[in-house]
Image (cartoon, rainbow, N blue to C red; front, side, top):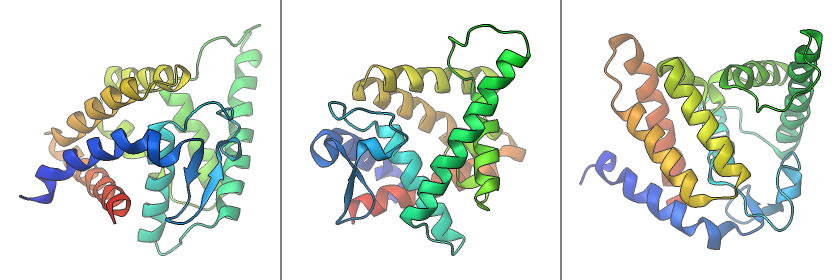
Length: 201
């Protein structure tokens, strides 16, 4: 079987093993784990690490290896710091624009803005962000659906919901037909393939 045909099998296998493999820790390499409270304090010690958080981090690592700039824990810490600052700037803009509350989640456009600033501040290529090529390739409605559904799945600590979101995203990227977008969709899929292989090895 071609690797493209069995990629989805590996993905489902990895997702199904996340509860056992990661627990309350986060994979940084094959022998080391760090507690989830090191990841932007997004999860408390009672929650398991979300599948997308794992994929986003491992995707970034794979892409930076591709650029011959492997990431250290110091690099990740700087990224998280710059990401937090950029996130704060986005929230402050809401108040500058007259908002008195900030109840809604950030949009996918705001997420892209935050990460562009964070990656630039860290001197890293923006395409190392998991969603960079995705949001360039897919349409507005699909992007917002993927982003909202992912945030809801993470907020509800639901791996089942994350599986559905990921498979929806993967299928959309796999079936891109616009000639001007195929290159980026293939790049994203190839990088994701390397992430999956790194889990398997």
